[in-house]
Length: 225
Image (cartoon, rainbow, N blue to C red; front, side, top):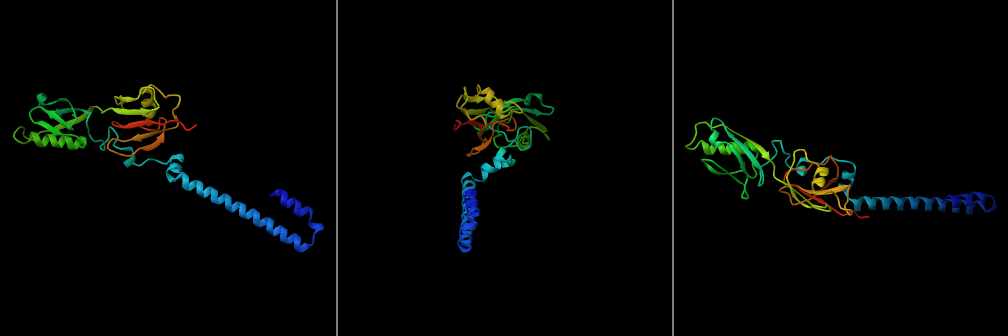
């Protein structure tokens, strides 16, 4: 484009004014058209890449609905594989540590099975108190805490894929380390996580900013290049 303009300027004195003006206007139009084509190509790239990728690249926060129930918060809900410590105040024989079984129930002394899966700790406490109050104890008081969280799973391009015990404060880097580290084919920049109870994976950075929660499935993909 700069060469065309240079030729026009050099030839200005050697061609009729009308021809020179026409050639100059044509050159300007060509430059404008080329700019429009570049803009259309850029717009097409944005459309193909999709808004999700740009939000991810910009470090946009992930919503609470995406990250699931954090351990140690009121949002956390019990499920199969969790172990709970139940304290019935004034009743040592009814207290202890119990597993949430494959059906989502906890078997407790005296009152038998109590549904736990899908309940918050507060809701589970209330369910136990309600059962104890029916013919067993007067105004029972119960406290429940998680003593061991359900395991997580790591799959894909790690040396030892499988299910591992969850550790408090776990990040993607901790999960990869438990899985024996990356294979040589692994994409070390991003991972795909499916939260417990969700059917969809979310793509997140593979670093210590990305938390792993109990019951998560972490998948390490192959790198493209």
